[in-house]
Length: 591
Image 1 (cartoon, rainbow, N blue to C red):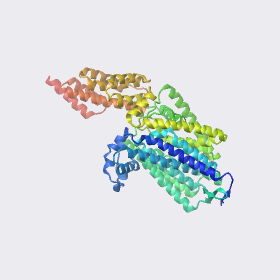
Image 2: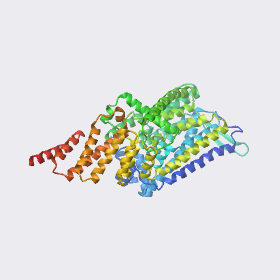
Image 3: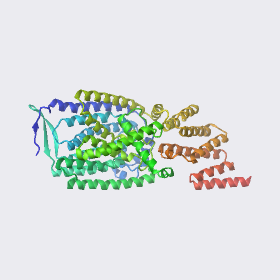
Image 4: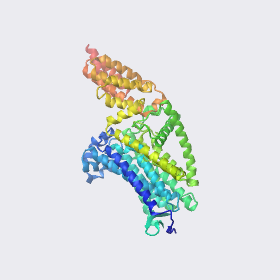
């Protein structure tokens, strides 16, 4: 039994300091995000929210329909879509309601980071120590101010990342409480200051906590599949707690049964994810990916991991898209990725045998990053994204906070103030970029002037819409990648030719250049670059659009019908190709 004890170090002032400092700091961060409440719908917001008839038609009284029918074209995320209906009922179609909802969720998540950090630390350190409260406070402040969170909070479509993190943290917190030998609370005493008290966890409370862990994990999966590997982290926690308390590695019976249920649920949802992903083409099954050598696929995953590590440690030059295949970043990404993999293997040993919470933070990051490493290729506009780091970055914050404790107190304060100031200023600037799609694409193009996908979004969504064709060509040529620059430039020429030129030969010449690029053998590295494939896919659509425009303008041109038929056959549109080929034959015979 673990009894109350009085220690001078646990005085009321220190207890008050840690709690109030965290509260005030997080409140200030949330105020920064209020700059975004008048922002509009950006990119996927139009498809998932504004133009999604399902969430506008289904009533809250029929909430069960979100779990039995498809309510968005790409994903099965019923809790995310249900949360949008709540926004519609409370605030209508105005974006402000959705943004406020995201900010409130972020505030709750920061509070859960505080509770979860305390719970996880109690698994590794069973002594009554005020040190845990300060580590949890540092973790919470680092997490709340981290600039990579702006994308998930300021973007309405980032709701799935918020909900997934919310329920994942609840699952980790409840599981940590269940496997801890006792719970800890701090009570104030008029004469003795703060008194830490502990009580043994009863079997009834343990059962309830394990059941809640299962429910919260299920809710996390219904919000986003990013937390699918969470049971591995909980297994690691259970093994560490068992070693700490009894010297044995395997968890006790009740915990093992709960973990077994979590792993069964994980496999079931992975199956659903694969089925839905293939049906909606979110999971890529294109020939370009199938023919990539396994060595290049592994190399791509290592680069993605390295890119996210660098972004988590040094969040500068933030963007909605990141270039993965430029020469400098290839080297940096590979080095960081390999180093972090080695560090993760070392951390696995340190967690189990040395009970190192610092090492657990490293594994927390690594395990939760696995779904984003394109081991199962999925459609995304950038293989390295801020939103992918939303929950994994908590592991980096935890490890850093523990390492910071090794410094003298004055050094701790100086380092922490510098980092929090940098994070806060960067977050403040980045929130402003997410007020509209135009502001976002312009900011990203200026931040990464040689990133072909950032430039493509800027050119296609801003310059071409405004009719600035000459400026669009100039921007395209500034792209560092020669192939990417040529692809974007030809796309601009094609759009300009269709919209502005009355000479079909100009459009056909541009189409010929693009077709030669679309059907040539690209390097394996390029075929492994999913954003690059998206540009090619956009070009295919524009080629089809251009041919349709020309055929409508010149319906009696047999040559044009024949060329269009050849193109359609190459992209497997056999029925339309047959029609235009027969039309060309008819026109030739009539002439």
